[in-house]
Image 1: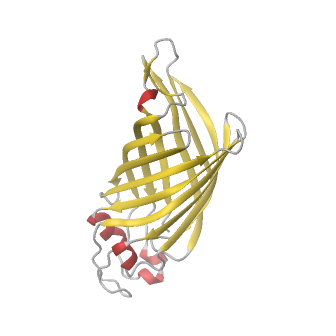
Image 2: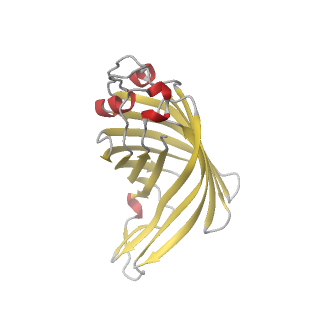
Image 3: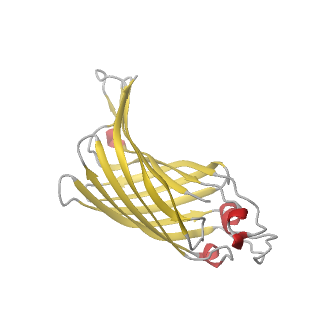
Length: 245
């Protein structure tokens, strides 16, 4: 079964980098787990339950350098990684004859422009484990805060993959039930994300996320793709954690 997980490693804008000699060295981050659902594999028309996770680096103090810890806006750097679970053809009759795909971990980063009302980002990731391909993700969000505790955001998402990525997940060769198909790189999917964050207190938050993706180009035309429309979601309880060095 294929399970997907996208985590923001950090979101730190350039103005948040400062020199602070007197602060104690340490790191503060937010992490949580909760129930989720997602398509069983890229292109599946069936969903399966799983475990969703969220991770966000909030601040880092090391020596005289401080990252994060303030509501500063502007152009800065952001990190991103995504986990893609393994896909076994034995689990799905419609994929009979296809080679199994190992689990993959994508790691990368890019640029982000943030304001109190919206953000725009572009990141590039590489599969350091598994598919060993490049993918790029572009998106933006508009924010609405009806109360001090509740934050709503939503916006478009676009995923681009190279030829190796497309062939790994959407190409077909030697399958018993599917015609051979060579998938090329380009725009893999276009969609949107909607997210609600409720701050219970300074330490605990509940984050609900719904993602819609529609496959494009060869990803949509692949005989593996049973449905071009992919919907996933999660409800995660996160806790702020601080470690001193």
